[in-house]
Length: 413
Ligand code: USQ
Image 1 (cartoon, rainbow, N blue to C red):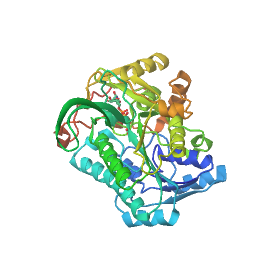
Image 2 (spheres, rainbow, N blue to C red):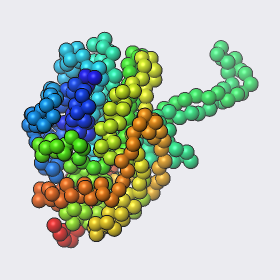
Image 3 (tube, rainbow, N blue to C red):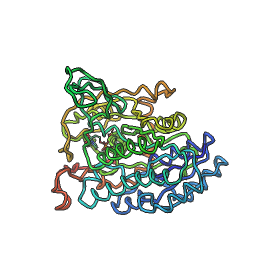
Image 4 (cartoon, rainbow, N blue to C red):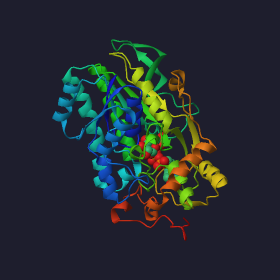
C-alpha cells in the first residue's frame, strides 16, 4: 500500500512511518518540521538526541534497505502543494498526524490558542478538500484523541464514537401529531474537550462527518489515549532512528514524564491529588493500530469509522505510587495548573482493535524500567528548569510565567 504520513517527523508519526515501511508499505512523509521549531521556541529539546530528517531517512535506508520519501511543506497553509502532492503521488491512504498535539502548549496564551485552532483545523480541512478536488479514492486515517469525550462516566463504558439514544417522537413525516413513541437513533458521543488542543479534535470530528456524508470520503478517526514508551522495534535499530522523548511541562505526557523524573531523581509531579483517570496505550501498540486501521477502511458512503485506540486506564496517583515503589522515586503533589476534575472514573470500549487482532502491550515493570533506562542514558541532556508544568488554564498565563508549581529543593542526578 502507498501511504502518505502527514506529520511523519513527530513523536507518533516517525515510529509509525518506520513500522509501515518495515511491513513493506511504500511510505512518504510530509512534514514542515514544526515540532522541531516549537522545541526551539520553548528552549526545550527532546531528551533523546533526534537526528535531522534527512539523516533519519538515510539511516533507515542503510539499516533496512527501504526508502522513505520526504516532502517539506505546511499542510495547513500550502493547499496547492498538498493537492499537487496527492495528484502526483496518488497514495492509497493518508495518515494524518499533522496537528499541534500538546494541551498545555495550546492553553499558554492567545497566540497559541489561535495557532492550534488554525493549524489543526486547516490541516484537516485542506486534506479533505484536496482529496475531493483530486477525485482520488484515498482512505484517511486520522489520529484523534480520547479527550474528545471528556473523562467522565455516565454509568456506562464510553462507546467507540457513536452513542445509541432514544428520542420521543410525536409527529409523523408531515408534521401531524401522533401518539408519542420512542425512536432509536445513533449520534456522535457528546463532546467535552478539556483544552483548546482537544477541542480541535472535536472540530475535526465534525469535518470528517460532513465529508464522509457529502463526498463519500473514506475516513477512520482513531480516538487515542496517552502514549507511553518511546522505542519501537524499528527506532531501536540504530541511534540515528531514535524517537523523540518529551519531558518538558508542555509536551511531556504524564507517564513518560514520571519515568524520566524517576530516572533523573526529580520528585514525580502529580497534579493535585492525582485522581485523574486516563486511557493509555504503549507506543508499539500505536504503530500496530495504525496498520490495522489502514487494512480495515470503511467503504464509500459509510459513516466515519471511529476506534478507541487505548488498551488500559490508570489513575495518575496510582502510576506515581507504582513508580515510587519500583524505583524509589519521591512523589510531589503540585498545584494542578489545569482546569479538570480532581477525581474521575473512566471506562471505555476498545473492542474493535482487539477483535482485529491487537494483542495489547500493557503496563509491566519490565517495560517501565526499559523507558526509565532510556531516560537515564540521556539524563545529562535534561534541563530540570523545563520540567515544571507552567502553562495555566486561566488567563493569568498572559501575565507571564506563574510561580504556581513548587520547584523541588534539591535534585539528585
Ligand atoms: N499530569 C500530572 N502530572 C504531570 C503531567 C500530567 O499529574 O506531570 C496529569 C494531567 O493533569 C492530566 C493527566 O496527567 O490529568 C494527563 O496529562 P498528559 O499531559 O499526559 O495528557 P494530555 O494533556 O491529555 O494529552 C496527551 C497528548 C495528546 C493526546 C492525549 C490523549 O499530549 O496529544 O491526545 O494525551 S487523552 O489524554 O486520552 O486525551
